Image (cartoon, rainbow over all chains, first blue to last red; front, side, top):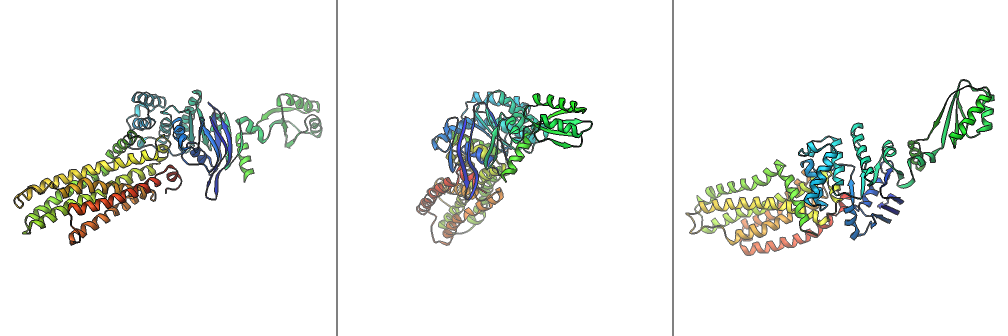
Length: 306
Length: 244
């Protein structure tokens, strides 16, 4: 649904997006992670045909980004939620949606149906005649998302949709994204929020001007460091360490009575390690499999890039 | 470019304007105040003076011309509000992401900035002219208004002045980041039109249909030139990457 190849955008001497090559499939929720100034917004703006590219190529829904002829076609099939909600504050919630429905050339009947559907779905139907300017941040954000959906787009670009929202409002927006995921919408989600990315995204790209890694959250986590096993013992002796090293020699670290060992397959390796410890006279208090987090992966990649 | 879409954009702009009381008062009140004020000027300074009919005519035409000056001021404020206001509300980016062309958005906003002030100016001018005819009934053998001079002023020069101010407001909007700044810049647009007025008062030029047609022609040429400049200013890429 979205393909880019060596997509590049420069502003004078500054390269905002450098040789970005990625592919997002239909129905996929793709998270785009990166620090401020990583080029995430610039990428979305290019893909929505809001600004031009200075190099490479990109296609959205089969249409060519950068082609004057295809720009309107792309904007017709995409919905865009900018980082600033940008609602018309002196229009009501209903009027905001209705205006955008008009801009997408929806008929009166289509607009009436979609306005009602989204306002009810987002719990804003009772507030439909209230000026958007009086809404809370969370309500405005929901309305901005609904606005991007009034024309039933094939692809939805969201730029930091939960930034500056309180946890409850963020949860509401996340749940809405998950609803869209069920409807098999293709979603391109720019976010700083690692937890959000992990919860809602099928795949994640980590970007810092250049795309540094792409994969499922699990793949990215594994790419930093494999899984580890933490074994808490009553007492650690040299005999236990020697015995353990014979069955599991990889990166054994001792911290007091806790041993940490890198494992490739904990289901197979942990029983062997426990047997070795017990055979050496040790007493195991707990065994815990520890996975690297997406945060570990993100921080490592971003720091390595500096 | 469709004509339907700019009209839909203009309708929404006018709906927003209707809810901004200060803007409404500004658009409606100013021409109405002018019409009352000018009627008093006619009553106190023209009717009660012992001048020649040609002096009456210059006085009446000069007052009518002020509606042209205001046609160069009022739309600029609305256009600046409509564009800079959207910048401030951050609503331009989602608007630009829709399948509307830059030309449709610009035309829609221009229509919304054109219609309300020009209608208000015509209404104010009509009140003034009716009052002037009534007040000068005993001085002139026939109603002075309507005449060719006022016709050229109100139906040719005033709309061209309004277009001039809208186009300049679009250009100004790209360089300012708040509505007040845009309004201040827009307030300077009356200068060329006032210069014509002062030249007429000094007797350098006459406020007759021929002179006004020539001036209208000049404004038309400037409008066409400004159209291309404003069109090149109002482009998605420019708005998102270069506007303040």
